[in-house]
Amino acid sequence: MTDAPAPATDGPLVARTPEELRRALDCRGVVGLVPTMGALHAGHRTLMRLARAKADTVVVSVFVNPLQFGPHEDLDRYPRDLPADVRVCAEEGVDVVFAPEAATMYPGEQMITVDAGAMGERLEGASRPGHFTGVLTVVAKLFLLVRPDLAVFGEKDAQQIALVRRMVTDLNLPVDIIGAPTLRDTDGLASSSRNVYLDEDQRASALALSRALRAGADAAGDGADAVRAAARAVLDRAATAVPPVEPDYLALVDPATFAEAPSDHRGAAVLAVAARVGTTRLIDNVSVTLEQ
Ligand code: PAF
Image 1 (cartoon, helix red, strand yellow):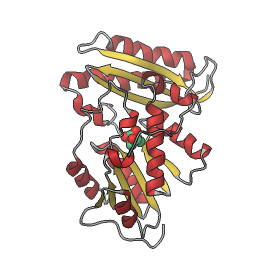
Image 2 (cartoon, rainbow, N blue to C red):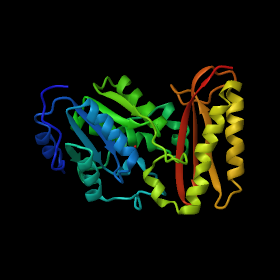
Image 3 (cartoon, helix red, strand yellow):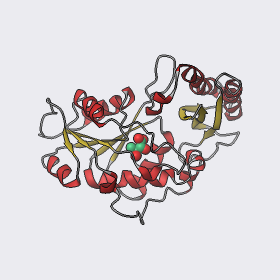
């Protein structure tokens, strides 16, 4: 860290345009960026704290990125409350909130995008075609606008952070990518902006995701197929719960490619799940090490 301005004490500066952002970052020291789509919750606070510990100037971007939503997804109903988000940022000592309008980020049709490659077509990418092109494109734009030295992403979105790391490597972007461990409620539910959509019964059913991951991780000593079978058994039971959990995918993948791990896979792997409870789509994952 360098001699840079002290963290904001009376709330962050809110920049609405790239010009305001550049002025805010004139005297910047080490800049840490936390990209978000707002609806900030306790999980985001852990990302901000990580950035605060490592950077002189912390920027949080709040932008619901239309490019990463499919035509029938929840873009319109995605929770938005900028004043509440700014309050959270103030409490976490964030220096700058960058909250651009969609027309600022996408002044015209986006002809040039960042292609997420084969890894971007697996799991989340298979269920949400074009999603990761949208994510990588907006993350690249944010990197170019903010020019951070480091950026913090949540490990709950395991495939997203793997792809961002790969983009940084493949495009030689001078940004350190830092992963923040998933924050869970005491019952195991992973923090997510979409949890606000769940009523009490749906929330209870949604616990099957983290239970399935735990069951899978507990079977790691018995190999890849045992991990998949243990997790699948929990999800199968949850499919008959009220309200039911409707799985989208459950996969044990190689963390470098997100391709399915073969039965004889050894070493690091990611067990990832996506499922719908009611109309809410949730994802979660856990890292496992296979020794068998
Ligand atoms: O993880 C998210 O909230 C979004 O995908 C991100 C990284 C802010 C890009 O819009």
